[in-house]
Image 1: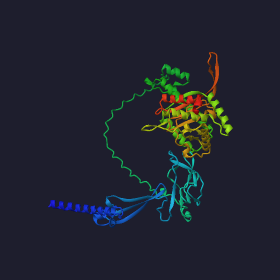
Image 2: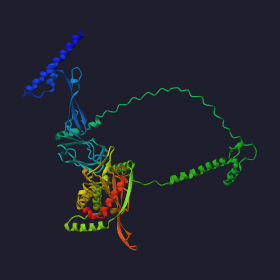
Image 3: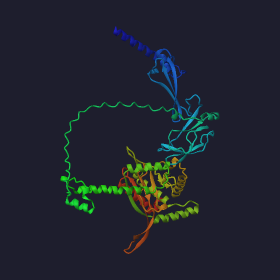
Image 4: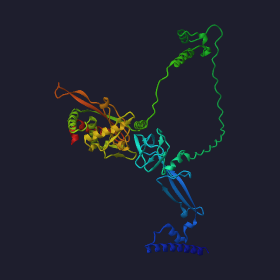
Length: 534
């Protein structure tokens, strides 16, 4: 009997396979037929359409990054998904549809991520007001990122219905809704009291059930041994005589302490040196306590002003603290003779003035020499990662610029391939944008090496800079000064100008010999500047 039932089951399976095979043959034999889909296979296999089994269709709206995602789930009449899996269709629209029936279609604009390290931003200024019409490419507002103030442009045409984050709002997380736009102007008034779905619909966190306190297990404590009785000092014998050690008597006489006021703790109530010390200490504490109170009450309060942290200040503090705590720094200093460099600069500036160009600064020559030295010693043009050391083929030099808002490091890209006049023009333009707080992300991202010059503008002789992560080295440039140096003869002396430079290196990436080799190459370009023009 069992054998017969097995034969019947196998015959049913063969019949189903033949039906599917026949449907496939008909598909390939008919050139005008639409591509075979899942429903055709289902019809061929079971003889009816799967849509006959569908009884419900649920639609849910899930906001994702300021937009709405419509997800349709088709379920069978028996409560199981078709084909044994959930059949869903997801679509992320450009303009989000509100889940509330009383609100028209609208778009939630979130705080964008305008730099790789940005996690939050501030609204510096709104350039559009509620009710204004916006078009693609128009600037909505200015966002203060972790490195600069960037203009945020509108991506679609519509009307600004609601400003969720007002001008001056700080510490807005990336993705958090800052504004609402609509397609039709008459829908603006419907968003007067609107709150973003990300905050309004957020379900309160479920209170976790407090775990039951563990049952206290009674542990039988071993009976403690009886404590030894401390021998109490015996009271001194009655009479006018006070027993004290010779050292205690001498100490009491020197400090004008009457022995009758002290209770002895020595053998048979004898007063010892420790009793005198304890008495003097207690008298000293009482005597000094009162003047300290009066001194504190008369101390004037400090006058101060709390300056709130700017976004660039917080990021600078975080990155430099991370650098000093995680990067093993070491420092190499060398003096470079700049007499020939100054002579070449004078000649080049005369040519620039004749042609109407801008003057070339010493810092421009330093940037060029650093870029050429990196091309000669590429190990210093690298960064540390968890899996490898990444050596860059592009030589992009960051130049430190101090402004009223903080420290900026705009980048001169491919500095090894650019001329001195081009480098000077870019540095001046980037420094001006940094002072105006108008740097864009492409103006400061992608650097592979940093130059910080405190010698020319401030006259600092020598300093050690902090490595700018993820870079592996930074060059600190001091001020040039004249020195007396030995000449060719025994009694001959010359005067020359020397500029000290210090290279800070990440020892994980740049070994000491490699850093010294880079400084040797850099010094060669500075002391023989004609080689930079080849």
